[in-house]
Image 1 (cartoon, one colour):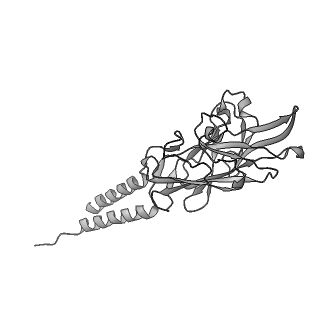
Image 2 (cartoon, one colour):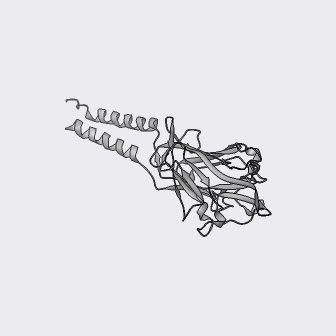
Image 3 (cartoon, rainbow, N blue to C red):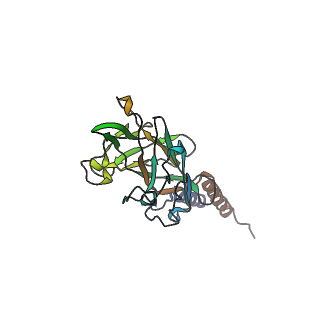
Length: 281
């Protein structure tokens, strides 16, 4: 009976350890001046330490055709870079892909155990992506330049290798973008009308949430560029267009396997010591 009781104690502690989670943790950009969510205008990488006391750092990095960023971008404050006010607090990417439709930028979000370079395993990951739409520049009533937001290669980085597909939802009303291949590894968000002229009032028609569900990941990434599927080749020299990363949320921090194993080994050793017969005398 002593062995059975000890085994049950160890099993219970294992379940508690592995299943231990925490409330939803969100990195948002609600305060431009807050050093915890600040972003140096024009910087291509930023680390946010111990997000909301979670023990997890979030590292955001931008690579690819970064030379196409407009001056001062990436940036949090649209006013500060001369674009005008926007009431959606976010990390904004404003790019000009010039005449090469293949040009794009890659945004990576990685989760690390605070103060280390070790990957943190998290689940319930979701992110908001803003201002996904289509922009057409007219001259004398005729289009001379078209930019169709294309967010693609959306995938989570599974712990232990491999990728997790995302699903997407529109945040409000009739979206100014199409969700293509939802839930598949090649899911995309493609702009199909100007969000400012959308049937849905306000900018929210261009905003989406991407979700990775219960997949245990250590990061996610996506590519932002121009769709460029226009019949008229004279339109394929897009002008400046922008989108944004609004927030990143994760709901549970999962202990690293090595940590869990060491903890259970310690519990097992305690059980063995306690279950030894007492010496006579």
